[in-house]
Length: 195
Image (cartoon, rainbow, N blue to C red; front, side, top):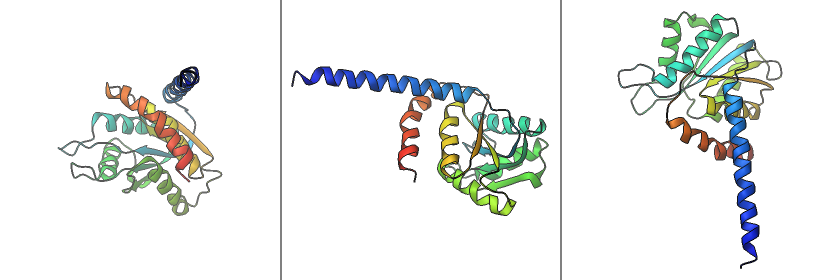
């Protein structure tokens, strides 16, 4: 048994190094927006407040979509979410916010079944038939929190999109620490078990 201790220590050290390198990449990838022209921007849903307004976290994602659209970086916008515990349809609330901030309603597509990142990616793929676009040529920018960018891009690539970029919401809070740590196992769950 004693002879196993060096092996266990080495394993734990390698695992810790792997975790640190991966987490550093998640932060680097999440903080560096890819400001490229895209056919579609996909805003991932989040909490809607009890008064029906977007939470600060969600509002920051929507504000990034408004910024990118105004700069000519997004042609269409997909808002994706589900019905939260507050009883509001996130995607409808998101669309209303974007329309109120000068994005034309006709360029906004509503995904009311985006209950997780992978589902959002699959639903975005389904919209391509309606838009008469192909997976190979369609450029997509996912918009979410910085720690969520890397896994979101993976989900869209797993769904068949070949050109996927990321842009993060300009919003920080203490829970981001936990959320960043959680992204490590979540990423590999998507990588190894999504297909």
